[in-house]
Length: 114
Image 1 (tube, rainbow, N blue to C red):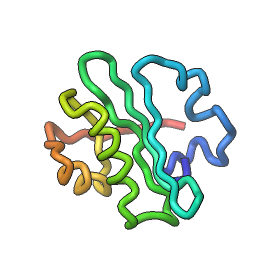
Image 2: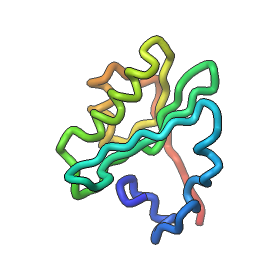
Image 3: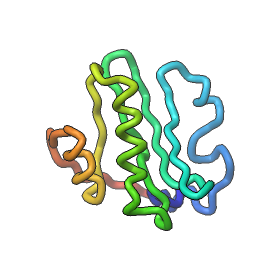
Image 4: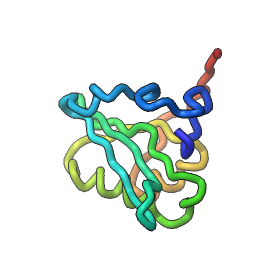
């Protein structure tokens, strides 16, 4: 929540952004990297049987530029090398995704209303 950042979930209340029941959902995987004993980068993937989606891949600001986002995503990709993969990139994430073989299909504008 701090790494993305998801301001609408701050301050974080455990289970508010993603309910704990998701951990047992088939196709759902959480990927987490630690640095100096602290959780530093994370993301999740969901495989619906047709493709694997990458969601909320983020590195905590205090741990950026250490290759942790790359390590998390590369590890996830290695778990399904023959699967089709999809994601929606921020401008900050685009260079990482392109370097790992993702191609831009289209651009989008997202809106939210609080």
